[in-house]
Amino acid sequence: MSKRLNEEPQHPESAMQTRRDALMIGAGLLAAPLVASVIPAAYAAEASTSAGDGPFPAHAYGATSVTSPLVPLQIERRALGPKDVLLDVLYCGVCHSDIHTVRGEWGPTPSPCVPGHEIVGRVLAVGKAVTKFKVGDIGGVGCLVNSCGTCENCLADLEQYCLNGFTLTYASPDSSKAGHTLGGYSDKIVVTEHFVIRIPPGADLAATAPLLCAGITTFSPMQHWKLAAGQRVGVIGLGGLGHVAVKLAVARKAEVTVFTTSQGKITDAKRLGAREAVLSTDTAAMKGLAAKFDLLISTVPEAFPMQPFINLLKLDGTLVNVGAMNPLEDVHGLGLARARRSLAGSIIGGIAETQEVIDYCTTRNIKADIELIRIEDVNRAYERVVNKDVRYRFVIDMASLKAGSQPRS
Ligand code: NAP
Ligand code: ZN
Image (cartoon, rainbow, N blue to C red):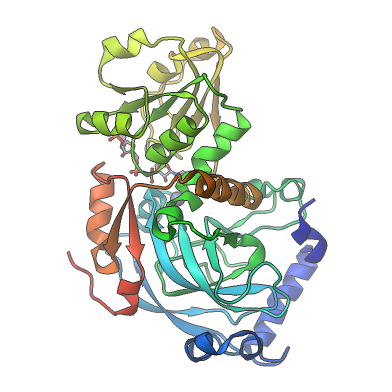
């Protein structure tokens, strides 16, 4: 059982209690000041302006409608609760999910939408009951900031499949206060310690940030479907998730094939460690690979004809879709049945597994290939992601937000 659950039961009533406590702390009615007592002098000046007893302002970039670009915004972060960690955000990756959400491609998006769920930051302050972090540590936040903590999936460290609804890092109803969550395109964020990942000393902070989503999302299916040395795995789509998937599969000594729609990425795929790279429009090459694969991981962001890929699975092989989250196209019943093939899906990973992938990657020096950008270039970066032109993850240097800047178009 997860340690958090012993410490912090969250029945609906106690969750309400927590919310009420947060409100009362916000109003200065509960608890002594949490910050001054835990912040060393080096951080006290900054923290005292940013995390007193109540909610406090933070700088952010976000969109106020699904047709608007991201612009500078001032937002409010909640007062630090006893189990909360305040991060000074250093880096935040740009995931294609940010774009889907900002643009309302997955349904209505609350306004303002401040995306960002590949967050690495320095701990500026901790609540009085925090045990996992101290001021000055480096913490990471991925896609989840809360879950019920009591359902069977949460109890099995699978918070991403919480039966009572998890809280996503952004654009999700906020379980700690009214409104919705606001993500990591921001200079500060407050998150319950259980959902903050320890970033080990020595990690390359900017290039580690993408592992908090792209890394865990591709690591988790490799773990679940037990991808082993010598097995053949195909990665469909060489973008943010795909290029990390290649590195993770190579680290397991699997034989990796990349399926891409971009001729220009063939060389890169091999440099990343793939044994081969195939243009998925090359029907002859696709036919030649029929029934060869143990596992396929699709990171394609929208529905596409899957049957040509399912045909590549050997007996009992599985295609795991982590990309398209809309109705899938063209899957043939017999095409699955004739080799007892499976079509599966997977979302991100639980907190324990996210910690595992971060530790695994730091130990092996696995990191994302990144293009570090300033916040004012984020709208341009979105266009390049949509045009399959990211090599291979944009990461925002959040120092550029602190400097205060206007978006460039
Ligand atoms: P990305 O960087 O844009 O990479 C996606 C890649 O897929 C592209 O670079 C391109 O690679 C290929 N592609 C794009 N459009 C395509 C199309 N119409 N047909 C065929 N291939 C296409 O995106 P990402 O950040 O890696 O995210 C990938 C998807 O996973 C997104 O939809 C995202 O929302 C989703 N996601 C899911 C989870 C989860 O938990 N399941 C977590 C994170 C992200 P080539 O140029 O090589 O063809
Ligand atoms: Zn993501």
